[in-house]
Image 1 (cartoon, rainbow, N blue to C red):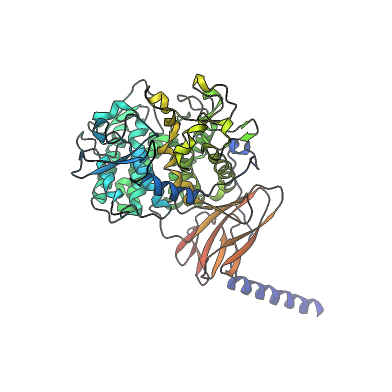
Image 2 (cartoon, helix red, strand yellow):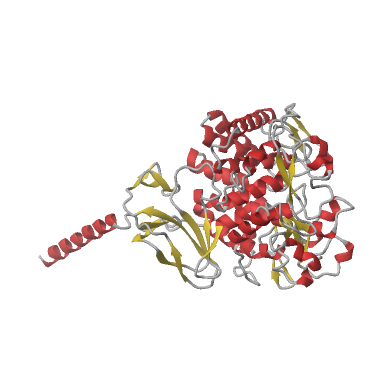
Length: 579
């Protein structure tokens, strides 16, 4: 009799517990996500030193305020000018310097038409990411002006790095170096997501997608070329490395086009180009496009039910064992007490040579990738901590004078322009005496008349908005809040979602602000709700060397499982819930 009563009590308690769960967490932490390592990130320090995280968001706003101000004064200012050549579109456009003092550029040189999409689109995109409306700024529509980079006069009909071939040989890789022709379209597609009503943009976006779709059809899985002529639809080789990772750029543009326009041929093209990259047996990472392949693979797995194994793409991004562009990848090193791990560039050139633009731009695809595949939460969280910390060393007011080539010139940067690169041993003889890390730039190699200040990179510094949009601080100095949505363009409806990583040797209590409206918090790494209802400040425990991917779900949202995914009011909050 006592046994019967005890069992009844236990059963009743269990039912009450389940009811309680249904009203609060609903799903228990019974199947946390097993993390996948990226070996090169494993070799990075948990606690990089010396440690400091810049306010990248404010830095991006300060950059925009100064660089886009034609009234700025100084020996090398202003950095922006008007271009009335009316190339491709019958409108005035603008240029900004690639590097400070670049003698090839400005309104008085080459009729003002030598400027680069890497700088112009990159900086407009970066500003847009931190909330600046570049379509209506001081009476100017900088978004609309970018249409001049859409090259119609040469019949390529895509966004290119210059507005025409007249200045193509002055620098950059216009119509001869594949990534220079593909990446501006990746940036343009991202930018267009901020300005869906911009005049002519939809027509341009469709034309670009059609060109890339045709190109992929011609290539038919073989991307082993130096560049592609989009006017004749011919693939070509030259002395420049073959760039198989151009397939990642095609996949990104085509999948974005599919999400925007819904045309199934774009999805087919995205799959075809991505599979061309996945089928490679060796690493062909050339400049910046490779990590976009990992993002698209993870996203298509989540949204389209594919089963792409993209671990090779991640390894190729980080490893530094590219078979053509020797050493290209992510640095893992400490130079005279300075951790430089996480920056992107050559792992071998003069002992290592990382670049600011590449570092910022690699953040763009890899952080939102975690939203679609949280198995990489720990790895990407750790890499981002290292990359964010090392990124400040490019800025002349953040690295000691003895580690700069031209500290005497840093006042010209007005606190917003960084050196182009960090190198272990200077690649100019006059600076070989400087101990690593050496803040430096390539500008003087581009033209023999370029001044010393051309080592300050206007183009690379303009991409700071990527970091500014993604990175925020928490109450724990070295635990960052990383927005996994802000660079996830053309996404389905989503609730605010953030990645956190604890690099410390012990657990930490992290406090964040979840906003005024009450929400329940889902941790996609734990596969569990960790709060049934909270507003304003919220604290949670984060285990040592582990991550959390938190989704802020409306407190009364209906939670259900469909096709292996976890939904809240028909919005996916975990793409891998039952995997």
